Image 1 (tube, rainbow, N blue to C red):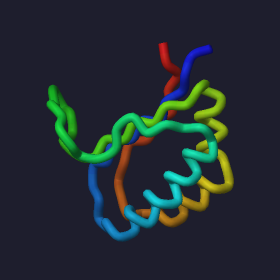
Image 2: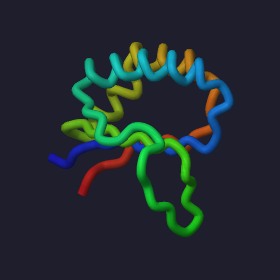
Image 3: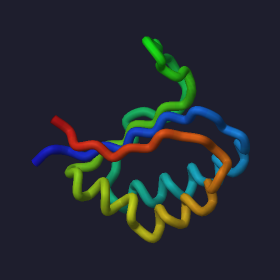
Length: 97
């Protein structure tokens, strides 16, 4: 079974305090759903083409279905309410190869 991944690229962070509050709630929701954070933050990266040199988050789940279910969970939806318009980001759920 192919793994599932959450991929988030943050274009703009307008409210770091709300992002921090979201991070705490989202981390709990992700762990409860079996997710594993592979990359979080704006550490070392090399950006090519139209890449954005901002925070990138990569989270792995055992399956695509688990990744979707985690996003739809009540716990994660609560985290999203906290995040609201504090950031502009590109968020995707993708199936691994």
